[in-house]
Amino acid sequence: MELNKKMNRMGPVIFALADIKGKHMLDIIYKQTTPNLEGYKNLYSSTGWKYKYPVTEENLRTALENTWVWICAYHEENLVGIGRLISDGALYAFVCDLIVLPKYQNMKIGSSILKRLKQICVDKQIKRVWLFAATDRAAFYEQRGFEVRPSNMPGMQLSDNC
Image (tube, rainbow, N blue to C red; front, side, top):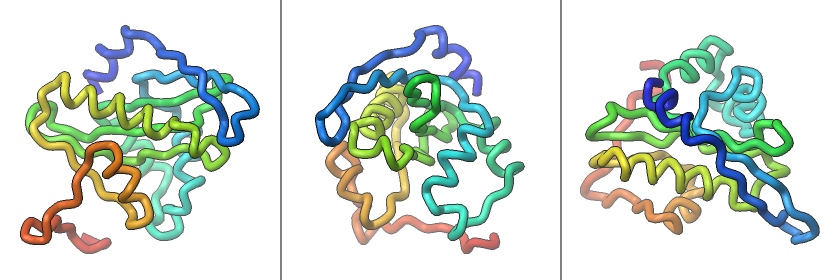
């Protein structure tokens, strides 16, 4: 929230990325800024999560307002990827909603977003950074430095209707 406002002064970072077939280059602009509600809804809808964990527009609006840091990826002014951190700003941070539109996947956009989120945690000296990953996505995070929690230190969660 406040951190996003302070760090926005750094301005956008532009990267040229090859698409999966290597046929052309895309200019992807990364910004540390809160996305608009429509862009967030579009990305969230692309995941299929809304069917497993239904959310309302108000839920998404609250998430927008209460996120510590957002990293957004834009192609031709269209939001194509996001990642966010929920944090107390000192001890713990939680990576949420690392989402890239399907047609932009496998182009290192998710990796670039995650790298920026991790660097913010390093810069702010956050002690622990966590995330939940679907089984078929765990390798992506492991390749980027995250470790599966040991079985003697399992994570816990409340049921869906806590």
